[in-house]
Structure formats: C-alpha cells, structure tokens
Amino acid sequence: MGLFSATAIVMGSMIGSGIFIVSADMSRGLGSPALLIAAWLVTALMTIIGALSYGELAAMMPKAGGQYVYLREALGPLWGFLYGWTLFLVIQTGTIAAVGVAFGKFLGVFFPSVSAQNWLWHIGHVPAWHVGPMVLGNMDIGLNTANLAAIIVVVLLTVLNTLGVKMGAAVQNVFTSAKVLALAAVVLVGVFAKNADAVAANFGAGWKNFWAGAGWHSVHAVQVGVGGPTAFVGVLTILAVVQVGSLFSSDAWNNVTFTAGEIRNPRRNLPLSLAIGTGVVLLLYVLCNFVYLSVLPMVGDPAATTIAGRGIQFAAEDRVATAVMESAFAGMGAKLMAAAILVSTFGCVNGMLLAGARVYYAMSRDGLFFKSVGRLSERSKTPVNSLWVQCVWTCLLCLSGSYGQLLDYVIFAVLVFYILTIMGLFVLRRTRPDAARPYKAFGYPVLPGLYIVMAAWICVVLLRYKPQYTWPGLIIVLLGVPVYLVWKRQGIAVAGKELDVEVTGT
Image (cartoon, rainbow, N blue to C red; front, side, top):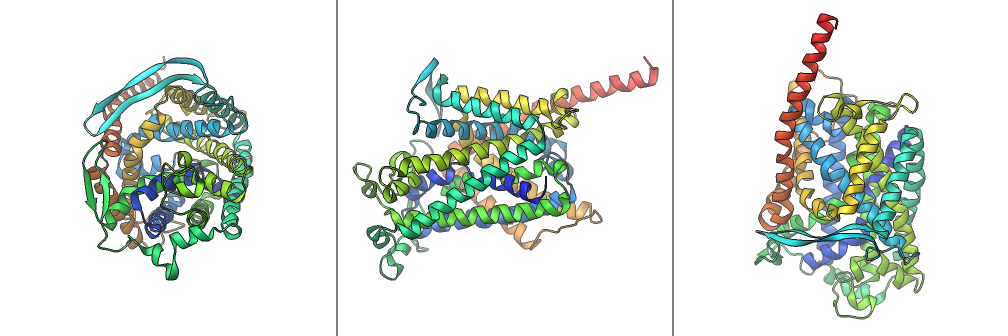
C-alpha cells in the first residue's frame, strides 16, 4: 500500500455514521452553539496531536500490530496484551458490529423489510439489570433483517480482504473517496440551503446568540450516571463530558498503524497518512456542524411535528444530517442522506476489518493469542485466520445486541490506552535515545504533554459524572490480566517443549 491507500484507511476508519447523529446528543448537553463547535474543535486538536505523536512511533517501529507494538515496546508486554485483548473483545469488533448494523438500519430506507424489528429468529429479551449507576442487559438477542445485513457485509468484506491487501486497499480507496464527497456535499448544502430563521436563532446580530451560554461563569446541568442526581458544572467540565460523542466519531484513526508491515516506505507514508487523513476528516466534521447550525435551530421541542421545530437537539432518532438534507431537499433528503451513510459505513467496516486483523496476528506471533492466527496465507500473504476469527466474533456481537452497550463501556478505556501510548513516546525517548527516528513528533514535548493533560482531564470528569462509561471499561481491561498470565504461561510451556525437541532431536 502506498500513501494514498494508507490515508484512505485513516479517513475511512474515522468516517462512520457518528458525525451524522452525535451532534444531537451533544447539543442537548451543551445548549450553546459556540460550545458545540468548541467541543468538536477540542476533539480535532486532540486527535491531530495524537496522530502527530503516533507518527514518530509508527516511523520508528513500522511493524504489523501498530499500537499493540508501541505499548509492548515502551511499557511492556502486559500493556500491549491488555490493549489487544480489549481491542478484540469490544473496541474493534464491537465498532464493526455497531457500524454494520447501522448499515442495515439505513438500508431499510430503501428496503423497508430490512429492520431491527423484523425478526427471523428472536431468541429472547435480556431484562435490565441495575448495578449502581449502570444498566446492564436490556437487549434483544437473535437474528433480524438489520443485523443479517450487517453479518452479510462483514462476511463479504472479510472474504475480499483474504484475497490480499491490494484488494482490501482498493475497496477502501473507492469508498473513502465516495465518503469524503458525501461529507463535502453536506457542507455544500449548508452554503446553498441556509435557513434564515435558523441562522437568526443560532447566531443572531453580531453572533450574540452563538456565544450565549458559553461564558466562563455559565453553569450546565449534568445527570450523574443512569437515573442519578443532577449536578451543575462549568464550561471545561461540560466540554469534557460531551467528548464521549465527538471522540467516538473521530476514533479509529490509529488503525493504519496496524497495517504498517504492508505499507510501502512506512517511515515516510505512515506519519504523512496520519496527519493528512485526520486533518481532512476533522475539518469536514467541524464544517458539517456549522452546516447543521445554518439549516436548523439548535434548540428544539421533542413534541414538535416539524423538522425545524425539533431542531438539532431533538432531530428524529438523533439523525441531524438527515434532518438537514430533508430540510434542503423535501422528499428526497432522507434517501440522499441514507445513501451517503451506506457508503460511509461500508467503507468504515472494510477499513476496520483490514486493520484489526493485523493486531491479533502480531499478538499471536508473541504467543499471546491462538497460534493459528499468527500464520500468513502463502497465496495472498494476508493473515487469513486472523480475519476469520475477527469475523466470527463480530457476527456474534451483531446477534447479541450487546455491542452498543459494550462500546459505551470502553470509550474511557480507549482514551486511557491513547494516554499510555503517548506516554510511551516519552519513555522511548529516554530508554532508546539512539533509535532511528525518521520522523520526530511535532511540538515534542509540549504537544504530546498537552494531549496527556487534556485526555486525563476528560477521564477524571467521566469517572465522576459518567460512571456508566468508565468503571465497566476498566473492568473489561482488568479482566485481561489473568488471561494474559494464563496465555503467557502456556506460551512458555510450548516454547519449552519446542526447545526440548530441538535439543533431543525427537
């Protein structure tokens, strides 16, 4: 893969359906147009700093496995395994499942029979289980036409990726290009379909309304946990709380590092692809939110019967982009937006399938995953077994109905691993000062240090005000410790037997 394909993986993995829906929930929590834009700018700043920092690690260690390898080399094999464990169990496979089911749901716009309510095999409903501030369970298990569509997409793209990295990269190039054009189209809609009432409500004379509620002394309400008490917090705290949505929409930009072993001239192309890919996508994300504000009023009424009356806050099913397109193109808007999201989700699934399998392959080579996963196909030179193991677990998550809940639980854990990886940059500068570094992190040590401070602040705030996103994530990560010890012991035992065979010749 060259620079274009690597950049396509970065952009394709980032651009899912999140940007089209999360702004509704964020706007309900913020209540200020300026803070909505500020939240996305914070996400953009953090993501770009993270990408520039990862660029040094990627150029220094251009190996399959990416972030798993960086954590292993900087902090030790346990930390690498915990990342890979969480990635396989939930982060990568859960995201693929969630995006795949989103594909199925939006396919229903064109084919109404494709629906999460159209059950082919309804196994049953798991009742809600309240544990402190968390709600576990409360999900339907079985096969419906929406998750069947997701499973078909996952299996199809897995087959394509087993044919070789060139095939997977070619699919990614086509769909990433289409997704960028779809986002650019949304931006153009904002230029030509501005709503005077929305502009007046969100901006006002001299942008007075835009800045309303964004002062340093403004207070915002936050519900602590699920069904917990309401707390009143300042601007910095509320911006940290809503980062759950925007950071999730911008996540997976690091996936390209998983495929480092298959990228041409990785010491040059990896850092470039990270910088270009994240920069372009995040610019489009910020512009899309300005479009939302120029077409729909931010404040809305959930009981309203019109698109404008519901506003951004209460867009139907939180599909803000769909509401914008319907406002601009009455009758055809929903189908235009659904088509854009289908393209986006298809490319996102492909990029994450291609990248994720390389991590489990690297773990297996270290004796920390199923041995067969560490083999490359002689014909295609791809980790075929790793791709199929990933596919099977993803399909089970599609059936379980639990993937969305699990994703909520690991957002905090994802952020923790980003912090640890960037801390690894500082560790390696000290422990391996003479290592070849074709690219050095821009702004080191100030910018990487700033990322750690900002991310740590978000983690602290989420621990306090959104425990339903944090403690379960930590539990999932920590469950990997005994698994690591068992796998490591078995790996040592296998290595010992192989050594005995070599010594005795039997």
